Amino acid sequence: MSGIGATAKPSLGRGFRLQWEAAQNSHVLLYPEGMVKLNASAGEIMKRCDGERTVAEITTDLEQAFGAPDLSADVTAFLSFALEHKWLELRA
Amino acid sequence: MAGTASLSTAVNRPGPPLWLLLELTYKCPLHCVYCSNPTDFARTTQELGTDDWLRVLREARALGAVQLGLSGGEPLMRDDLEAIAAEAHALGFYTNLITSGVGLNEVRIKALKDAGLDHIQLSFQDSTRQMNDFLSSTRTFELKSKVAALIKKYDYPMVLNVVLHRLNIDHVEEILHMAEGMQAEYVELANTQYYGWAWTNREQLLPSREQVRRAEETTQRFREKAGQRMKIYFVVPDYFERRPKPCMNGMGSVFLNVIPDGTALPCHAARMLPGIQFPNVREASVASIWFDSPGFNHFRGDAWMKEPCRSCPEKTKDFGGCRCQAYLFTGDAANADPVCDLSPHHHLVEEAVARAERPRVEEKPLLFRDPRNSHKLSTQ
Image (cartoon, rainbow over all chains, first blue to last red; front, side, top):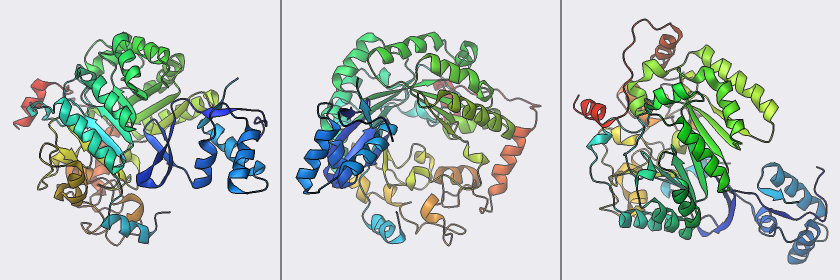
């Protein structure tokens, strides 16, 4: 799971859209002819990936928001997964 | 995930129609021999107006619909396509245009982009111009190449759909080269589904098992080479399977189709099913259509099932397969999909596949999808 440094700024992949769906009580990720229903933590991570914040900032923000001590490994693991599936991308 | 308990709850109260497909028109400049439109499409004269389509969008979105397909016919034949796409975007749909590309020029693609259209799926008949033109019965290949360039220029993901069948399946390698040349990010090699015109032309279109095997092998080789750059999907023709596809995830579960005259269907092909009254959006709200209409409740759950489906443990996975295929092969839509080798009618599928193995002796002409042939087929 290399490639995601603490200073990387992930943003939503091209062609994807993230939105809250009241009917499903969750964040969903929409892409050509498909949909992923995100669980609560995936939704919280994804919605912070705005291309402005670094991985370190996103992690700190989540730790504060949920009063959890060290989410770094969890966040990195999810980000790797999301990048692999093109849900997120890293702009140079 | 979907255990028995959650499934029976879903039957009592279906979830939202997550996937809304609007077939805006049956008009189409192409005449594809494998078109899934009904063969009697030419009988449809009264298309819904703009206001009706916009109302359908609002009502479906209020129920929780998220994915929208704008299709046809050729949806670009409607000059209100941009207005429909704009409303869909404003409502929060992920909006997909499913098009042959005919009629898509720079003015229209810019307007669609400004309207918020999310995605374009471009269909190609084949990679060689001659075959492409023959199968769609027009000279459109060069135009589509131009459209592909426009799609890239307006920063859409390049999604290419090629319908495969006996006459082009041996060209998979060339097709994939073409896709690569167009910088396609997704390629769907979709084997023909035999409904509508494709059913009429099935004897000429069904490939042999060996053709399918070679095409899959070629695709796999290409995948290994292309890696992450290009995602390639190969949709196997279900006639070659031993278990049916979970068609529509079960009718009335996630999919809602509205055809040009406003009839609402639980799948593209369902209108052919006899004895079922399908509702029309001109007369009923999308909510009452989805939750209360007999047309949508008919094949919900499993009360309609016969043996061998009824007692089959796999019924929660494949929902008995495709109702329309059951009807086309056996004359009874409540039978098991004959693709399933547990179906007493499975031999009918095997016989069709066996005929595809033999070299053609007598050829009947391909019937092109056009109004003249449609009228002819409607009166038979």
